[in-house]
Amino acid sequence: MKVSDHLLKRVETNKKRIGELLLQYTSLTQDQLDEALNIQKEENLLLGEILLSKNFIHPHDITKVICHQIDIPYLTELKVDEIDPNLVMDISINYSKHHEVLPILESEYSITLAMSDPFNTNAINDIAGIFKKEVNVVVTTPLKLQDAINRVYEKANRNLVDSIEDEFEENLDLDGPIDILDASADEAPVIRFVNSIIFRAVKEKASDIHIEPYEKEVVYRFRINRVMTEILRQPKKTHAAVSSRIKVMAKLDIAEKRLPQDGRIKIKIAGKDIDIRLSTVPVQNGERIVMRVLEKTNTVLELESLGFRGKVLQGLKDLSTRKNGVLYVTGPTGHGKTTTLFAVLDRMNTPDRMIITVEDPVEYELGGISQIQVNPKINLTFAMALRSILRQNPDVVMVGETRDAETAEMAINASLTGHFVLSTLHTNDAPSATTRLIDMGVQPFLISSSLVGVLAQRLVRKLCQNCREETELSLHEMQMLDIEEVPNEAQVYKPKGCEKCNHTGYDGMTVVAELLMVTDTVRQLILQKADSSTIKKAAVKEGMTTLSMDAIDKIFNGITSVEEILRAIISDAEEE
Image (cartoon, rainbow, N blue to C red; front, top):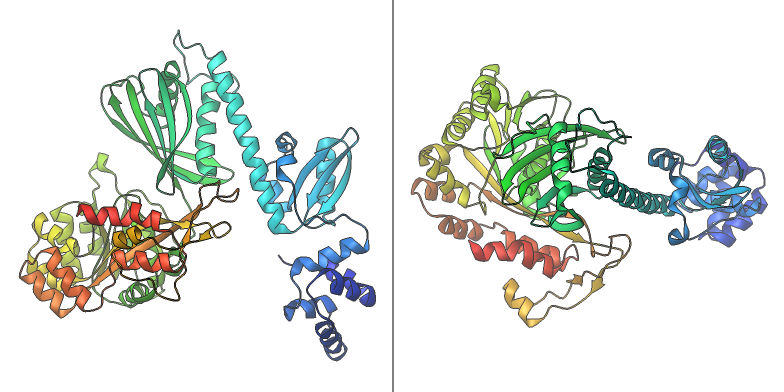
């Protein structure tokens, strides 16, 4: 939080009184205050600026003491459960977050606002105009306020979804034909119902929306943090209208219900561009619909923030300085391979490098990088695009996915002619990538001479830092993890669940990875067509950190839990 000048000047108006309040209501000590006053005499700066620059107080401490000075109530906690979500129906969440203002109590003549800055008169006047009532102000920290805003608006959205569902069932005449194209939002509850489902998915950060028709009902499920969660059930008779509406949004044939269809929906939610990839397949009781939700953003995460650590992180940094070669990222669908590739590309994106990508679809838009989206309808495939862009002589090429031998051979040949190529493969671990390429028909000598590294990764859920509980590993868990003892400095935690993490015990995702660096030893094994287990043993002997080793490291550092690793990593290893 940046402290505004008018608050700092208000602190300056009464140094003695403000100093006493800071000592009373914050962690400031007398020695720190005296030091700040001495600096002020020498440098003629505002007292508040000095205290902040020396980290003697937090930015909001100034607001707190001013509230005590002018008798504005200051709340250390907001009782969110007691706030009526209907109070925010006429205020957008963007406005509420931008101005850090939230209505928390309404009476016959007044409305009480929780704010972080009690002198934001514009917001106070706006709210007074909306409610046509006198405004009373209470103050709390920006962190508490933002959390309350999220929770109140989430509750308001859930209430809206419930009311639309009720209206959807009551008012939609499913016995006769429905012209959804001609229906407005006011006239067709199905439109608002579908919009509310998509809005809720975006708000809850779901990666997929699954609509599954069964004999008597339709089940709606979200995939959140790689885990499927059921959100609601609807009568079977509603499915035809929902299916038609979604197809209309994707410009698909609403009359065709016997064949699978694929499409794309582009929408805006709260000013954010959302790209939805749609897939429909006919099943016994109707059409099963899956919508993959992609929030288009210009923000590319750094390798460190994705969860890369130690040897893997250093290896990726070293590879990002290469002038030629091929780097593959492997793993199942939806485990962040493209995000990792762009984190590497972001490190390589300098003015002296020309970078071109071929993707399906373009998920991140980066300045300084030319991006091509494949279009099978006009035969613009990965291989065709790659063949064309090599004529433009780029320094770095990123191919979204290596699906066939033609694409693989062209990528490898590009690296042999002085380009650095990044791409993805679908294999269970890093050493399996070489055998996969050989199975595609690529010659071993081409692979060994061009491949510089293979990164295998999985996404696992991170423990909620707010509610995790310390625990100890049981003998059974140690056997499953294949470890003999727990290091003395290790801290192992288990999930508990709180309101912050929606009672799941987990908050966000992190990556578990292994990086196979193609050394001379590995190169010789590739030429000999060695199997993946032989390559893996040789790489581990040379210091490679495996998926299981990285997973155990994240358990011992309190980042994730044993249960999550056994679910997402160890089970995969047993299947291989």
